[in-house]
Length: 403
Image (tube, rainbow, N blue to C red; front, side):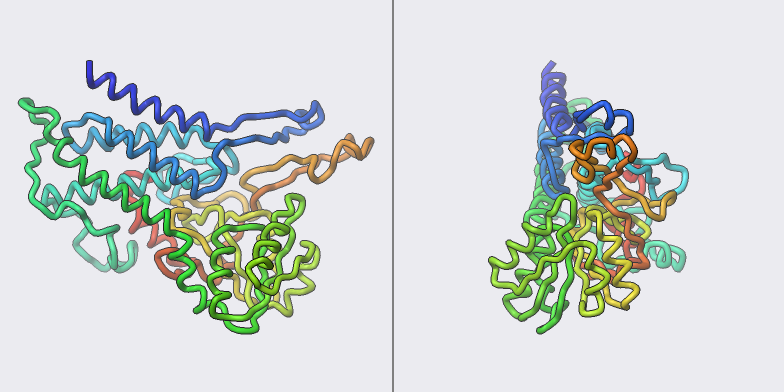
């Protein structure tokens, strides 16, 4: 009976987060309905916040779950993670980076990434406590090419002391979970700490990437990029050009914030990006998700900026936390929007007859291919797009790729 009560308790926590993540549709008019264009509201906005909320739920799940072996705990977390991922808004169809898997079309990848990372750390802690060596630790030429040099395998294990592990103990079914839960909770806390300090960790290298008197172009409003530029301003004098990013005009808030921080800032319309690119020394963008082929999804207009930068041989640097790296490929569209915003922001109903004569699509994200990105700056260092696949192998377990 007590086990059922605990199961119901953590399931309620999962469902509470599901209700926040779930897409809620609000059709603006019959015309929008006919065009198949919808706008939605979500209680949780932003990849980092979604990841933090997911960690809170997973910590509650591990705390209240009853399990007598590691497979039971993994299955419990898989079930919770699967429920959360299924609640995500659906967008462009992507496929996982390993053969024989199904397509995935969630637009908020940080939830699934966080679940996979927690599972990775739990498996590592269990192997350490049980003195088990992973089967893939032996280095060979094929594994070196496939996985890269094993420079790290997650965070340092917490279970340094000997723990008496008795799986499936019939005399004391709770002994396994009782002994390992504190270790698992510390591992989850480490993921918490990493997310809490992600902006500071990325900003530490800002002075190495931005030099005095440079002209930097960015687009929209990215908290990661904003903190990165403000950190560099403590050591360098430079100028930032912010594209306003219509029709959301997020660039207005970004330009105001940078200007208030004492950074020389200019706000320009998106149509001016190509014209001014010849004067730009570096393009710094944020990312919504970094996928396995080294490409990324970023706010609409990023593809325009990256393409113009390539035409002028201007390097494009992307600032993003490692929790945004996801084991998915964009195999089907070279130019694809991951999600869509309200079309009335582009063409309002006050335009009258013109609304009936045009189908308006307002993409929220652009897909930027790996050939347009020079480097990714993460909280784990700088990486070229070709290294993203190796980072995925180091961060997630193959058996957890599909939740």
